[in-house]
View 1 (cartoon, rainbow, N blue to C red):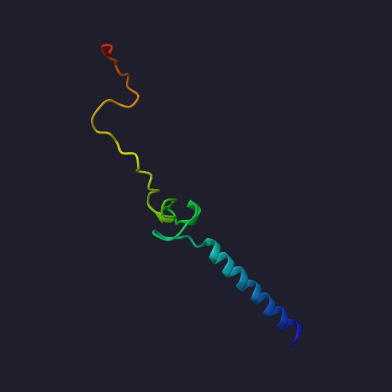
View 2 (view 1 turned 30 degrees about the horizontal axis):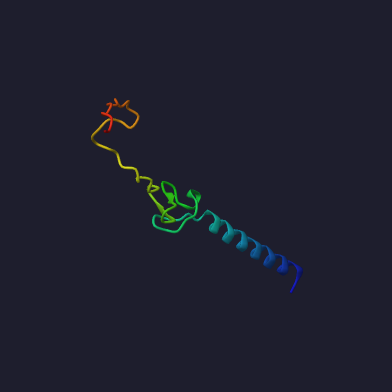
Length: 85
């Protein structure tokens, strides 16, 4: 094998390794695929930490809105109860 053929083989192998490495790094997970951080997911998706999968939302809707009643920070009037006997 000539020196030229070895160089061509070496350059081809390097290009292949760099190409595969770039493809793997650039690959993003789709909806429902496993993830650890938001960067693992494709554009428009976030990593839901509860399910460790890519989703359109992060599943943060645990706190329900209260439809009736005053807001939580509203002042409340206190009423003095009669003393216990």
